[in-house]
Length: 330
Image (tube, rainbow, N blue to C red; front, side, top):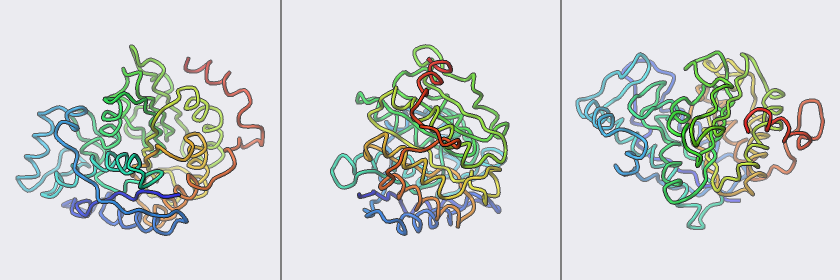
């Protein structure tokens, strides 16, 4: 199995003017983890997303604002989201990394992709930066895939709910958004009742978990909800908002996962997607050792995992899932 490791040097140049947990060293840790995996790594430089690709997700006035603040030397967009002089270039390449991954897979050079880029993206809305995020990297890739007729599933296992991604596709039947996250927690969205609207009713699936939830809770949720919903939806492409702040050692996430839990989740997704047409895109994760170990586990799990994820009670993960899914979402 070959994984496209897509990154860009500009990710290291997006630097906060104050001490900030979302720091350049996160990229070095993710790259180290990918290289330490047992997967054959194909290193690829991310291309920048085009203006047209960005406009499929973000408002022109918002793009102009972020670009202008960067050109003026940087500044704070909210209490914890910043722009530096190099941030616009970094954000363009972060938004283009998923697209580069898709192109690399379709070119036959890799089986799946991991985009190790920053700033992260899943909190970014059409006209608003928040939660360390400037451009919604996953959404840019999803929108481009939908434009050409593909059905896309997004699985978000970051500790924080991806409010931006959900909002951008809440009315679309072409993007399934599944989030498993800490709640109540920042940004305050991601309730079970948030299921999308209009033609997209039922395509937003939220699994809020209490503080401290660990592997058994996540594995149950994958067995009972995530995997059967993906199977029922039948996506052409899977994008994973791969945040690692649910790791027990993370200073911000408040959850209890370990590297082997990410391996199990990734293995189940690999089986569901026949180990292809999948791109993991880095979101949160602020303990560098945890990021490195968890990225390696993610790649190994997706490429080599053989056993479907199991419920914590040891029962067959494929039994009665349809009942649970139908009663909640369809």
